[in-house]
Image (tube, rainbow over all chains, first blue to last red):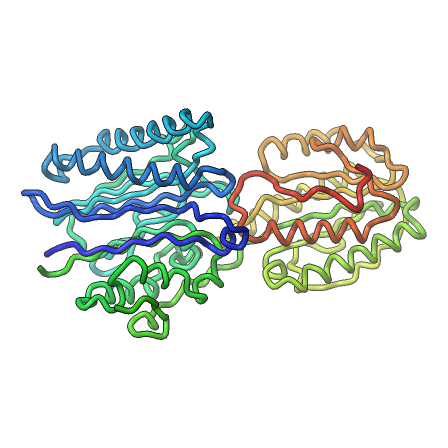
Length: 255
Length: 224
């Protein structure tokens, strides 16, 4: 079995109408080691009230990716990665953002962003998240959320990597059973893909996309992130949410 | 390879979206209807309110998201509990009685609290509520405890409280009541004020991913 993934971030109408660039960033990839193959998915949403949130999100994703690859190479397997390792990645990413802020004579909070990620192998997976957005996996009989989006009292407030209390808001989970489908998404999509009254992932959104990605051997639908972007910019979606949107999808398929 | 993707194309045509209730943007108006508002002030206030509802009704997103409650004082009366602008109504306020401003503020804060509880119970997300106090006089009842509640609510970010003085309003007491600097209405420019308020509510009800209260400058109706 091998992982197959696709990822895209698009700018929402709320920003593009004002000629602003989007503040969502993502990074995904497959790492092959002697012990097997690992999917890495990372997404971050720069705070809309900041000027540099997008830069913060980019630095966070890039730094986390590097740390994760280094740790995987050192530990050789996912089962040997611990909670302190993950906290270390997050603190390292936060320090990188802080360093960039200082260089620019700005404050860390000017670079505020949420962040979430997952690393998945054959039998083990880990997940972490600060702030809103979410991660959904297919546990075999149901699509389930790993973390519910962490929101403040009001719809437009959440927690950020730059917060002093970032460790308190850092959620970490490990799973020791195999799964074949995973999606990560930022808050621009959460109202479309989660049912808030039932507190559940919306199967009608995830199922067709995972199936398309699994069957898409000739890359007709998901040959490039460009195509996923077009999907995310479709009027059916932008009418429902004018915020920036990120979607990362990964499936395990036979070699 | 295709560059474009359409939801009409199988298998993506099968994608459906979760149906969640619209997030709500609550706004409470505390309106002074004491005897001194009789005549032109109350006429202009009523006209301004009608225009306010009209504006919100003509905005496809605001009509579903903005919820307005009206509470008039003297005496303290809930003219309309929180409702979206779909439920249009013409309040036809009359000016009688004294100015129990303290009681009105306390009752208003209670209304907000109840509404938030209802939102939470029904899984509805919401924005920070706004309270606008509009008065042409000074409280005729005990107001210090209301001022303490406003301060407490502002500190806890439970709501944002704004005070607007009309004509001979006691701006000094308004300064004690409100954490934010009160504003003075130019003449009887209620229509201009409500135009500004509906614009502010319309933009607040769109995605505004910020913790701060972003109001446009109060131009065209306030004395600044």
